[in-house]
Length: 420
Image 1 (cartoon, rainbow, N blue to C red):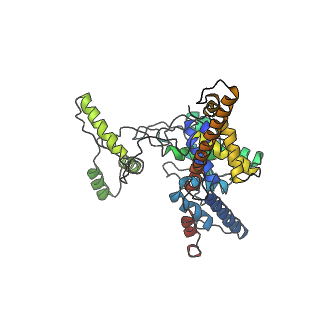
Image 2 (image 1 turned 120 degrees about the horizontal axis):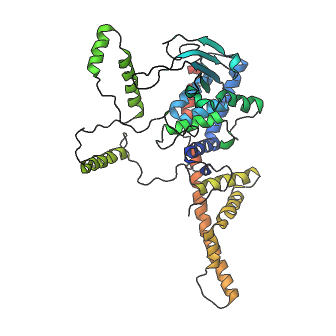
Image 3 (image 1 turned 90 degrees about the vertical axis):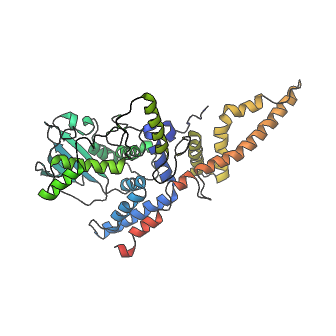
């Protein structure tokens, strides 16, 4: 029987849509190298504010931007841990027509941008119909970006008006005066930060859906594409070269091409599939191709619990609680062992089912105690191995250490004197 999570902050107790993002955050905040990266960014940010250094190329911005290509989760976390937020509100008109891809064409009527979550204090500009998004009031803040879309029709508002990200920010940071630090567990983190992490994970796991909407429209999902239907690339290129411009349908196809190239692996199947057996044969061939990744490696044959099992997380969190209370390493691990392992039914059965049968009750008790001691000794060594799987500061091979591997090179490159 699988171990049931016991610690209140065990990420394995969450639903599957939040479980892995929560594990990644917990591993990051326990990672010493990531902690050094946070302190480095805080130092640069304090220096820049003291010297009134502003502009898109300052060091603190480069640290985050460089880290995005190295570790997207860590970059988003840095933005929230050392925030320089930008608040954006779009007011869109009620759509009346569909675009070429079968979706509503949303026209932005007004756009507000600023560094305060109060909509009344944002810098508002009216938008010209057809103007590209992001062309008005462009800024170069480090982030995070807190965005909300409003409309006279609630169906086209962000989260159907059930969630106001700007109000969430005000309540967390200004009304409740809470701080978001490396000491903040997942369930106590800002709601917007948790949504960002869940969104990042949906880009990598096609099973996860948004915890807020129950959908995954904002992430790649399996579908049959109509990209090639009734459209010819050669014709579009010739027309574009002759006239110097492309029509709206061709521009839409260009955006769709980029989406397919960036987010999908595209497979082609003949239209003339005649029998179910033929469909099964092609499906089996597809499975073999999907199991072999583009870099030549293969997916594992069995799916283990991603980023740690419930028992491993209970071990880490209970151990950490004892260390925070002043226990040494072995004392904290022994307390964890006593707390978690000795509660397992398998441990009690060793004492209740001795291998020797005897009419002497005292002898039975001694044999049971001996068996239990031997079982505990064996399990204790295995327990230390299990603990090393998730936290191994000496060898550096634990999940806590491996979640953020070697970030110094990327950060040092962006913050070097030559870069400034």
